[in-house]
Image (cartoon, rainbow, N blue to C red):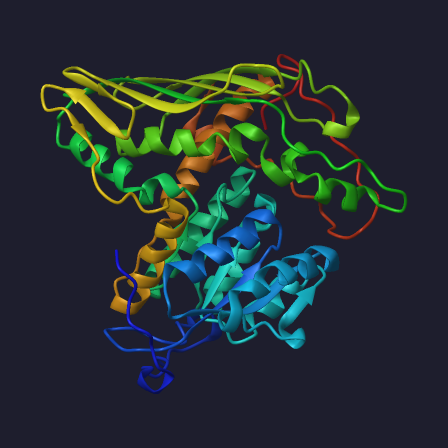
Amino acid sequence: MSNQNELSRRDLIAKTAVAGAAMAVPSFVFAGSQAQIKVGLIGCGGRGTGAAQDNIEADSSTVLWAMGDVFPDRLNGSRDGLKKLGDRYKVTDDRAFSGWDAYKKVIESGVDVVILTTPPAFRPMHLKAAIAAGKHVFMEKPVATDAPGIRSVMESSDIAASKKLSIVAGTQRRHDFAYRGAMERIHNGDIGDVVALYAYWNQGGLWMNPRQEGWSDMEWQLRNWLYFAWLSGDHITEQHVHNLDVCNWAMKGHPVKATSLGGRQVRTDKAYGHIFDHFATEYEYANGVKMLSMCRQIDGTASRVSEHIVGSKGTSNAQSIKAAKAWRFEGDRTNPYVQEHKHLIASIKEGKPINEGRQVAESTLTAIMGRMSAYTGQEVTWEQALNSTESLIPANLGFTALETPAVAIPGKTTLK
């Protein structure tokens, strides 16, 4: 998809008047008009910094307008790195915010689009605030760490649809031309009926920041968010959601139940919080088709990150087709991390909103359902997962004492 022409502010269509702040609409509507699109970044870690770069690369109309992070050092480090964007970098000191309310200030700074890249625990509240303010959204996956968060994201997504706001998620395989081409053919029946699916994200360990003197429990957990289920959802949710999303895409829906096992065999030091280091899950869809899912983060082990879809007449790795009608993508395979932003900006300009909110919420809940099953040792149904009352988010958010949850023990940890 080619970049759109540079937009000029004089062609903005006036903001539609609606009753009540809850029904706020976008600050602009595109229908072939031209405007400068102001982007706000909420969450200035490595992924957030990368997402801002991808957004600027995607379309010549966008400028980075405001930034926010709970930590001043992360904010300033990201700002230093993004200044290389040149005149597309418009973040002034009075539009650079830190602290727990930084997300609110970014949303209120006059931006048109917000990029949500904080740890996943905060995605529901940030999405809710952005949609209430009438902003288009790019949000990284996963989009919650518990069922109450999932329900909030679904509600915000429905409100966004009513306001004609775009929500694009960071499940970049959905925007990859090879994946899109293969999936179109799978849905057209080129491999016959889907009879089985396999999803893998097996790799070594990831980064860990040793605790520093003066850090509160909260700061230590935030700076090591991967290792706390309330922040990341555990790695089956934070990372493996990509592969699970592809399988749901192939099936045009979500599983109805999960039976999972997992544990904490190697990363046993308290520096790694309380999450597991491996999972294996059998998911079942409504039509009886099963998906085998594996994910692991253990150094020295074999790596495998892939999806495999078995049909009655062929197979697919979700990027090509092996069947009587074999297919492989040929052509310019645009970086999907950039392409997802191209699709977002094009949807805004053309006045044809994209809304991936419920889609990514369902894939995130698929992962959460697997985690719930592994933690408890019980079969978990979709209804149990979706309607769970278990909230992982601490009641009070602040740089205070915060106990590390106990490591889950299947057969003893209860299903809530």
